[in-house]
Length: 257
Image (cartoon, rainbow, N blue to C red; front, side, top):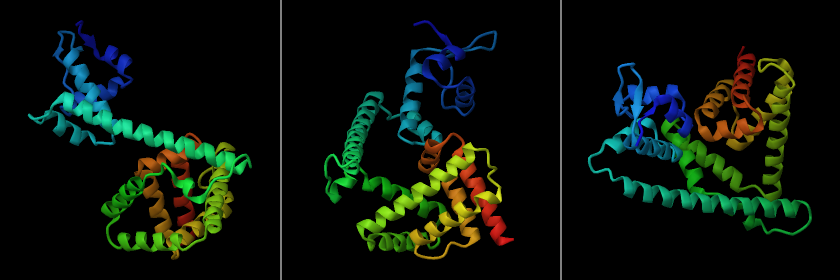
């Protein structure tokens, strides 16, 4: 096949030229050759390796681990593709179930069709929650396992109505918070204090213990450090994840000062 330049590879793959240069620098994806003009050129083998890199990234595998996987002498591309297809097919099935759960919940709330309590959680993966809890423990250590268990027990003790009320409160807080950003209120503004106070109270309720200023500021870092939180906040408004964390830190500093 015709050799492609780095710009051509970027265009067909959606990966930026800068990222491709970075992959070259760290030894993750070397070009097939470099011309006299210092242009990088890629062939079919490099395009297939790039596909593997991107598929592994879709499965949330870090770049360093991807390089080790692809450079393993026992790596088999066909086996990898079959495994990736199996994982993605399972995720597609779960997402389809989540869509059905959401549709049924909308119908229930609209009064069109009733829905039993157990069906509220179909498609929601316990493994996803376990993965998040493991990430918290690994990142923060200390008494995090006990704090997670305390929070879990507290939440489990609530009635369905109480759980719904807690989620409604969070939704109201986040909606008003995102609207503040869209209306141009600075993240450091004291105008956000009533919302931030409500959110801090909500956190304390979920933790089943007080949330001191330093812990509130630390929670902001936690939110920015996990892609699930970033995705959640960005869905409320572009740039909201950074705005959200900055507001929390500014409020914690005012409380501590």
